[in-house]
Image 1 (cartoon, one colour):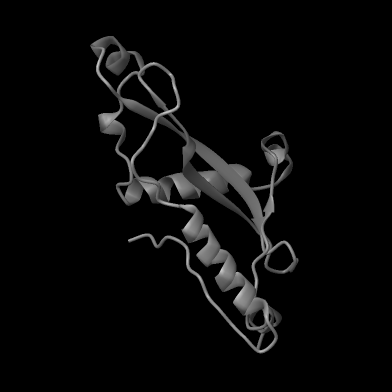
Image 2 (image 1 turned 60 degrees about the vertical axis):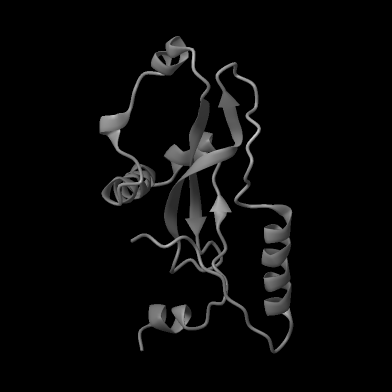
Length: 143
């Protein structure tokens, strides 16, 4: 068994070191990691550039609307194991900054991550941290 396979079989966590945007350029391959994430999103049809309109267009229509923003996150995945370290990018929707047509914070009827969901995640992590216990969680799966 090669050393990398041996390491992969013994890791139970994948610690990410979040990088500050001003330091991205210091890490070789940062642009490629972001491009990989962006291309995956486009291939999945998460959004379509053919439907993009200027910001002024809906504002000039004087209709109710909600405007959100995207945020790019770059981190060093498997920070704790030098042999497995790699850059990982995510492009996420900022649900904390959704604005209405008057630039006020929007009031939405439904929250996807609510306090009870966060409590469940924390309970799962606490259970898995106990000696002799295991737990698992998964991320969003691309189809």
